[in-house]
Image (cartoon, rainbow, N blue to C red; front, top):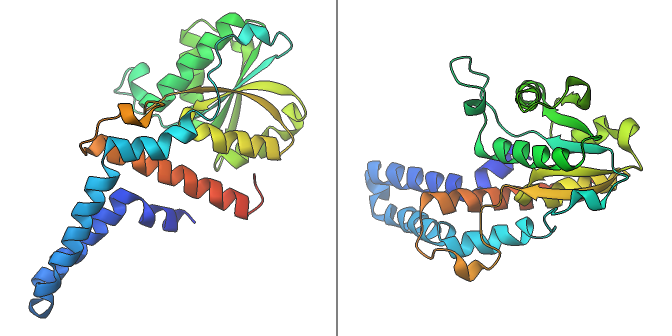
Length: 243
């Protein structure tokens, strides 16, 4: 599944088409055909790199669940689950500089919720080295050690749900992840018997796609990649009865 998903990401398709165009141009008998994959690659970039298209793909995912404005309206909740994103375990970097933007948004959102739910426990679930770094950052924020619990896993979102099954099953908790990833995360946790309340963050596109920039650029292409990746993940999880 991972290989197929990588192949069908718009940016990877563009690269593949350009590679085919170059190969056709080098091989003399195919040279006259080289313009076909080149035109296809250019068309795909113009379409998938447009902010309008990126927003049409990504915004329905990002705004499916409302933002969590008042966590204090849920006084019975005692856990905040934060799913990790990428972080560079590089000792030459400052602690805050090790996280990518998705990680930082998730850290900030979890910190904001914790400030209004100080008797909650923060559970960090994801790749072990990312969990460790997030743990360190929360300690820097002044969150006490006893309020932080690590849940290192090998795998993906569905593995976090499996790992937390005994601890949080049939309980309500705040679930923090990127807005575009939230539909898949909620689906997986609900399928496994959890009762999460979404706390999305890291919004990348406006809710109204007409407010997005029309002209293509590499940033919008990346957002289209993220959306295609999420839709592919959702389809795969549904086919394999994981959500």
